[in-house]
Length: 190
Image (cartoon, one colour):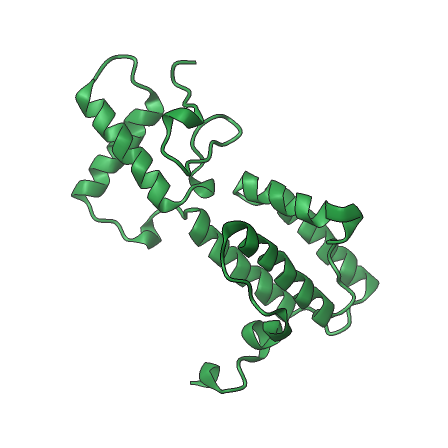
C-alpha cells in the first residue's frame, strides 16, 4: 500500500491506470515530465527505504533523460500523440469505407468500433468514447450505411472530443476533402 500513489500525490493531469499506477498513455508528456521531475527531486532529497518503486523508476527515467537525449519517436506516446495518431487512422478508415456498405461490412465496422472502444490503450478515453456512442438512447451510434454517413459520424465523434478538450471544432462538411480527396485548392497535390 505504501507504493501506491494517489492522484493528490501527483502533478495535475497525471491519470492513474485501473491498477492505481500512473498511466503513460492517458497522461500528457508535460504532466509525465512533471511527475518524473517531482519523483527525482523527492528521491534525491530523501533516499529512505520507503521510496516507492514507481518513484524510483520515474527518477531513473528522469536521470536517463537528463544524460541521454531521446527523441519523441523513441519514447512511448503520450495521450496527445496517441490521440492524433488514432484520429488519423480512424478518419482514414472512413475515407476508404465503401461508398455503400453491405450489411456484412456494416456489421464488421460496428464490431470493430465496439472492440476499439474497449481495447483503446487510454482507458479513460475508451470509456468516454463508449459513453458518447451510447448517449441519448444511442443517438450517437455509428452510422454505417454509406461512406458519407460514416465520415460525418466520425467527424462528429472527433468534434465531441475536441469540445471536451476545449479545442477548435472541424466543419464536418469538409471531412472528405480533409481525409479522402484532398483540398480543392490543390495544396495536397504538391
